[in-house]
Image 1 (tube, rainbow, N blue to C red):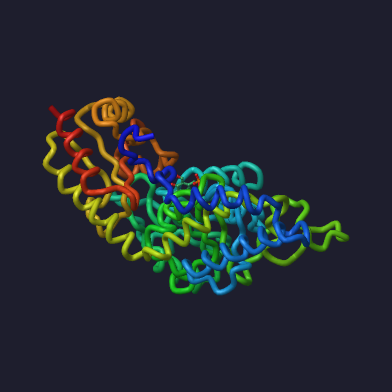
Image 2 (cartoon, helix red, strand yellow):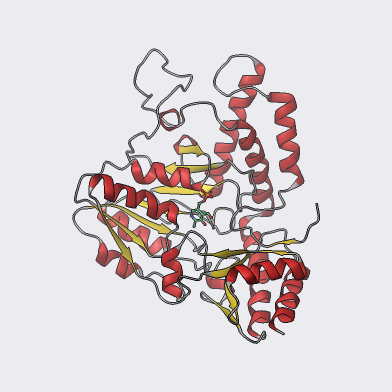
Length: 383
Ligand SMILES: Cc1ncc(COP(=O)(O)O)c(C=O)c1O
């Protein structure tokens, strides 16, 4: 269906590569079984698929042991496991930034209510940048978790993850990175960046289908289980196996989705993350330069393609963000998203609260012609 131009890749990527569609069909036709639940060829093929995909993820993120990667159903699922799996006690603290998504803030808020933990939200500049020194200042003797979004889903701002990782490792505090907007779009090296917990979706820049994601847990970081159930291993025991990935993967896997994710990863690794980044950076630069010339248009964030991922939030005159999104679709077939994008603190930081913004987010299948069409439509609406 060619219904317009898709600019909502920060929500989920579209289109997916044809190889992803083929992988889904191939799984349905030729595998179909549940992994780790049988010794017949189809079940073994499903098991191999899970292992191979874990190895590709490990290669992409420089993870030493693929078994330290847990399959989840999206980034929120991974963030919940990372955050709620910590052995919290009343009075413990978490240090995060105001730029976090609700998928970090809400689980922490629930723990605040249930267990009496404290959450320190470190402020950001009007461009959405978080200062690692401010993060360090917010840590105390009771800090059990530091979490930072790798790039904002509102402004695209890339955060100083490696600097915060350095501080966290020196203090021996687990460091969680929300890579919802960067996995597949920016190079990520968990060893160099000193990341202990990496939460990522499979369905955004990794080009896999909805219903996929994962959490990397560094060796030595202990998390409580949030769910227990069958794993096809140590079935005589009442307790959950203590080895990974089984400890955190009860129940049947989304093997169909993982088949698609594997094809998405092969596409990413084939193109190379640096070349995807170069393409998305040039689309963002083209858009930001053109947007500057449109009267009444305010763009938020760093407004420098090198300092942000391919996400741009904007306002046009005094048009409400939802109205602008509607008109962009009506006039130019442009698919954007409006509102607070599940990150109210980010909007407060940039001065766009409570109305929010209209967000354009580009993907590796967008073209310079798409960007030009977006600019033309904005220009027409600006009058
Ligand atoms: C920064 C950020 N974190 C977390 C999430 C949640 O991701 P998912 O939809 O895969 O749960 C999103 C989704 O847009 C996001 O942008």
